[in-house]
Image (tube, rainbow, N blue to C red):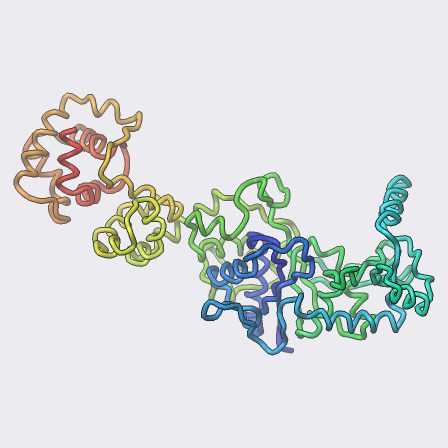
Length: 484
């Protein structure tokens, strides 16, 4: 059997971080078994469609390194569909769904329903008052098909519902949660085709997964209650059901589902904040999966090699931004300065006000700037903001510099700095020996030498290696800050 998995988001907004984790696990399983990873867009709920969301989903997956084999892709700036099982956008597959809805009606596994919204609301309220699960009462089950067709021809609004058998156990095996059984008496006659002619998720997902040859359905645990309905539809249509995998939910620190009310939750948010895709993907992989590995850092290729659903947890993973920052900082530290600069340039442009071309013209200078700050930057945005230290302008002094700025040695140090800089420019080589020159000229040493000078030039008592500070500030800016 060739493994085929799919990631099937709805274009109702930007890709959620939990959705990326689902896409990642699909991707890892497909690559581990030499299978195919499919992107399918489930846009049958037209009331929630967000313009540009499909393009954002595609771009977010590409940015994350999760390139899919089939589905809609942006090629030469245009949205095109790649693969021989398409279309991969549900709104372009409506005739297919209608065909199988008609088949279910003909076989007695579905029926037309003409109940109004008002009646359905009354049923729900009545059942809630009685403490019962709110579900449809089956009122239209007894409507003969001939009568139903006449009412439809007369223009009466309708939906099509699944006709569940009474008292039947629906059983399926989940690779994470084991054997699951639910009785049809605890299920609803789910709507399959809405009054606008669009299928519901339940109908469309079964048809699409079968026709696209999906072998493993890997999705969030919120879909677990719907799975028995899908299993029943597979049986009713005479199709072999796929293997199910329901992943634990990504939770916030309060152990509740991660939502925008608690802050950033979309992939775009983290991309804009300067997180590296490899760091974000590495961190997300560990939310619900425990690989057999001593350390926590893995390339995508290593994840593929190690991935197995046997080590996926049943309990939700806690999304901790502080832990993500720690992982991201690790990746930043281990980038070569040139690559780090390439990644950081868009943030540098925003923070410093220089163009890409201006930064590129002084590439060696800015690579050294990366070296100066890479040890203590959690994100590319933080890194770029730190680089403002070397921009001309007034210095903001932190509270812990006060004692050093009032040092009795500072006037002597200022005078000596001015004299030493009159002797030559601040090259990288000289920056490495300048404090030694200053020590020899003034006789001041240790903290009494370094702390006043650092505080004066940077406004902080701590920071990057000081030879980097001296070189990156340069002769003119150092003189400007010394002279006040």
